[in-house]
Image 1: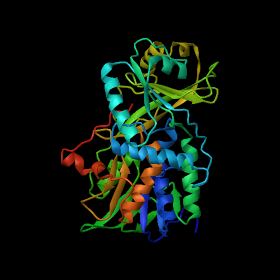
Image 2: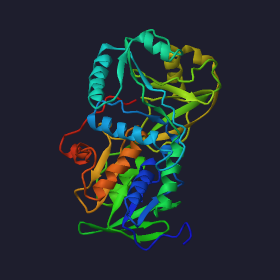
Image 3: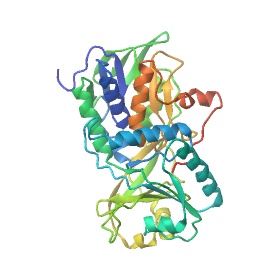
Image 4: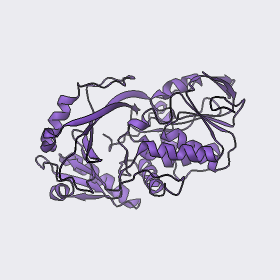
Amino acid sequence: MSPTTLPESADVVIVGGGVMGTSIAFHLAEAGVRRVLLLEQDSLGAGSTSKAAGGVRANFSDEVNVALGARSLQAFQDFAVRPGQEIDLHQVGYLFLLSTDEQVASFEQSTRLQNAAGGPTRMISVDEAVALAPLIAPDGLVGACFSPDAGHCSPESVVLGYATAARRLGAQLVTGCALTGIEVVGNDIRGVRTTLGSVETSTVICAAGAWSAEVGQYAGVELPVTPLRRQIVVTEAVDGLPGNLPMTIDFGSTFYFHREGPGLLVGMSDPSEQPGFHLDRSDAWLPALTEAMGRRAPSLLDVGLTGGWAGLYENTPDHNALIGEADEVSRFLYATGFSGHGFLQGPAVGEVIRDLWLERPPFVDVSPLHARRFRDAAARAEFNVV
């Protein structure tokens, strides 16, 4: 069978070949599911995963996100053994810089939540924050929050590890194959249509990130996911960077940075950005980035840039993921809408979707993340997102 030949049928068809889709494929294949088929319209990891900053953490304000983040952190630590891939993991910590008493109060509450779950997150003083990240200017800061077990790793390597292991276990991953429709008869899925042909199946799992709304529409399932461009730049070498410089986020402005070789990877949200599939780079956000940088890390203004890229967030109205199985049709499962924290939750969500498909309880109750929450006016706002 050539790499571009589709099987006539599959037990499970996964749509999307980023960290979420490849993690799901690996976990299903590892559990003994024989006919797992993953479809990716481009190359593996070419969507939002390859554009991610690579941060990994369990510092969240929602207990489900804390559990998913902590489980994934453990998986990242063990990744060289299972599934078997070096991912350049740097557990240098996550440092949130806080500039208002309201932010401090919110992070104090989420820190208590994380500590109750066994996490080592702690509130620290501004002086301690400066000691951890000497680049920052303390003016205007009133506190900080530090998670020493968090950090960053290589998204491309994570995808490669999951994809390689999934294939080794019998899953078929097909790239350059776009979904064009889902055949539904009554309330049952019967198959999928693609640019390379049709496949009979009774299960579709949507892990299509920013493209998930269209996938859901094919099955008559509403997935409120909106694409939003986010941009990143990489600096030239920065003298004197500590080897253990944490992932540092100025929470008020969303300006963040972490080490990238001899320089820094730098990003920030753009409040003027309009939703849409905008993947071209734009300089319109740079004045706001320069202003935030000048206020919080002014020495970086003298450092040149070596490049950058644009990617897509997959936002939901409450900045929480959509994880579950559709009520409208059998069987359509989804793991999408992570609003910027999908990469870091990929390992745990792969486990969860495996268990939902096998109809056994996952390690954490994800029912609060079901898409019906918007229909039932039960949205769950996640505070610790940038």
